[in-house]
Length: 318
Image (cartoon, rainbow, N blue to C red):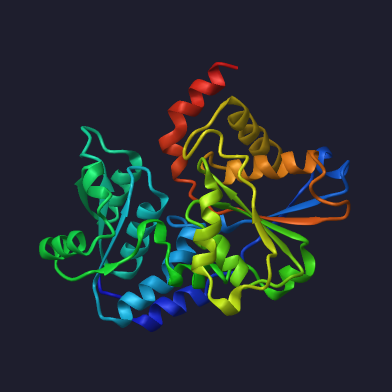
């Protein structure tokens, strides 16, 4: 496939139709006089949806500007970011390399099988080696093996990712919504929302990993001094369910009931935990009566396949 030009990549993003925003109606909301809306970023792209696509936009434009035809990044066997990178690279004609944490298993995850189908080359490294991923010597060894490449950090988390995530919200959103909620893994997406916001809206990040308080510093590090409009944001770290990719029966039941009632699929790693947290905060009267809350659905629905067996066991044990 021919490598897309920088202008072609920009043109593609400019032709994406407006992302729908869907209101959620539920007695738990109406009894507290709270309105809840979902920004359907999961519908942004069929392969690499939501904030994963947003994070890659300007990284791929930069790779093309540098005239680099190969992109490389890091992730686990079920990484939404690696999956999105493979899909986006295939879309625009880049070669892609995924450096995967852990030794190669006898059977690949469905995520990695999809990556191979999208043309990605996989390199498996031990967990000890993986911890060296940010060291210059490790990157130099990768370039010795694969030649020149554009490096996208793990999770797509860098300044260009923050720039892409600034496009999730519009000026009108800050006039309409009192609160905006987003799940957090690296903090880059929340930083993008902060960088595009003002004091009218409270931004809430819901870390999906245990002890997510460390993301406070990570988010602050992503922001430029002129992007810090006072502290109109906070992390609420109570909805990780034991850690990254950890789930329980309550979460699975909530996700199942939410999809059945509202016809919006959630996955249990990011969007499911955030939405569970929002409803719990409503019950606890965190939001004042009259609040209008916007939840950002960050996509990553491919992750459902990797969690399906665990979810089925939890359903069966009810």
